[in-house]
Each structure stands twice: as C-alpha cells, then as structure tokens.
Image 1 (tube, rainbow, N blue to C red):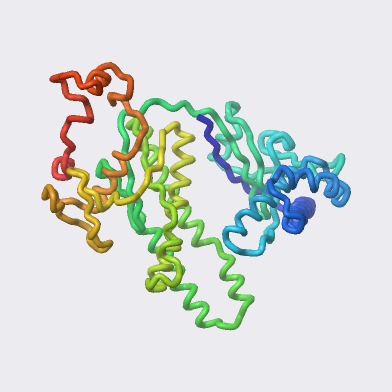
Image 2: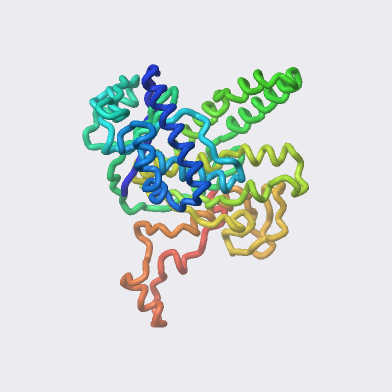
Length: 390
C-alpha cells in the first residue's frame, strides 16, 4: 500500500521567493476568474484553457499550468460548497515532483525561462531522517511565506492483523474496544481558554479592526491543538503496530450540519461542536497508520452507543446525557463509550488471523445444512459481556 507523508521545512524568505509566490497566487486568481466566467469544468480543461495565455502573460515556464489549474479548481470546488467567493488570499506555490530537484538540503524550483530559485532548507533530526532515506520517493512541494512542505512516499507492507480494535471518538476522550483510554481534555481546554481570551479582547477593543485582524491571525491555538492530536494519534498507531492490530473508526459526517444555527441549541453548544477536531484527529491516525502499515477502515456510526453489544437490542430512548444504562432485554449494565467501541469493532470487515471467511474449509458444510458438532469460530461462540471484558 502506498503511504504519503508531508514533511515541513523552514527557510529564509528572499525577494526572489516572494516574487515567485506572488506570481503563482496571481496566476491562481486569474485561473479562478476564467473558470467562473467561462464555466470551465474540470482541472484538465482549465489547464488546457490557461496554458498558452499564462505562458505569454507571466513569462514563466510551461510547467506552471497544471499546478495552477489544480489549486484553482480545488478552491472553486471548496468555495461552492461553503457558498463563498473563491479567491486565493495567501501567498503560495505548488509544483509536482517532476519539475523540482532536491540536493539533500537545497531545493531548486522553476521560475522564469533559464532561471531557477535555489532555497537552502532548515531542518532538524526529524527532517534529516527523510532527507537521508534513499528508499523514499519525493512527491509534490508546497511553499508558503514561512515554510516548505515536501511530500515523501513509500510502499508500506501490510500484514494480516491478529485482531481489530474499534475506537469511539468523543469531545474529551478516545475509548477503545480493548478498554484503552486516550485523554483529549487538553484540546477542549485549549479551545475554551482561547475562546475566553478572544471574547475579552473583543470587549476591550470593539471597534479596532487592526487589532482584531492581528489577533485573529495568531496560530498559537491551532498549533497547540495539532500537537495534542499528533501525540494521541501516534500512541494509537504505535500500539496497533506493536500488537498487530487493525484500527476501526467511525465515519463521522454531517455532525456540524446537524448542529447548525436554528436547531434550538445554545450558542455555546454549537460552538463546542464546531470546534471539535474529530476529522483532524482521524486524518492524523489515517496517514500515520498507512505509513506504519497498519490496516484501517471506517464504519457507520449509527446506533453504536444505543445498541447493546451483548444481545443487539437498540435503546432508541437513550439520551445523550446518560453515560451508562441497563439493557431492558438481557439486563446487561453498559457503559456508553466502551459499548460503542465494541460495536464499532464488530462492524469492521478487515479480515484477521483465525477468522472464518467465505470459501474456507468447514464453513461450506455449515452453509449447506450438514450437521456438525464443531462450533464455527466467531459465529456460534457467545459474545462476551462487558462484565467479562472488565
């Protein structure tokens, strides 16, 4: 399986790099304008449309056409979904692997005809490990005013796991079906802390737009949240690799749409749900698992916390505030989060060692109706209750 990881490098901006970033942003905005006015459909059609015009107007090499069209088309699609006017505000640059070269710590980027931009990279031990590894393939490069991100890829071998582990994602924790617990209260605390700081700042300076823009441009909160999520994702993936486990996650979609304005909820509740970085954590776990060769899949989250994992009864009257409940059918005492994690694990379809699969010897006879005294694994064996798991 192909695994891709983006590695961030620092560099010292120069007037030449700023000119390159500015030219690329202008090309992207012109491509967005042409795409909207002429109703171009698809990045390939957009590339063919702007190829000759941009080559003559900006006097740049012809390899800029495809990355410009790709970035412009992605902005148009994203803003159509968000109902915003598409426009590239920040300085940026992107180029595919075939048009730049990397000589250990010096990257060479195309610019004008017969002219290239040489940029020395600043790196630490983490970045050095990727530069020295000759087995990794280099992908695209993305540059901003402060950093350069280079994509590295490799073929990660994936073995058959010994078991699956489901994870239930909550606002302040991640609970596994094997009773593992990962604390995310630091993320919720950071969001609450910076939310209070912003509200107090806006109360003191209600009409100062310059200070508001400066305060809103701070990335301190985002970086601290990213660090906390990276730590949790790394622990989850390292545990799965060490124990030869497969990871099963919920396919969480439409959560923010369900908590949009006008649904009767408090503003604080909607704000808390809007700031919940569940998709960011899942993306970190996803790419780290691919890089480590750990199988991962997503399953439907419907009724995972309301379904009894012992007998399968669905308690549709269960409220969000009820963290534990008794199954009215079998009498099992269930904790909401571990019960949901077990149901998520059982919905996974990744084949594990020792599991019977269609066509295996011994399963065909059972399907045909022949009598057998040997129980079929994971089919006739009783499901353990939560008391036995504990």
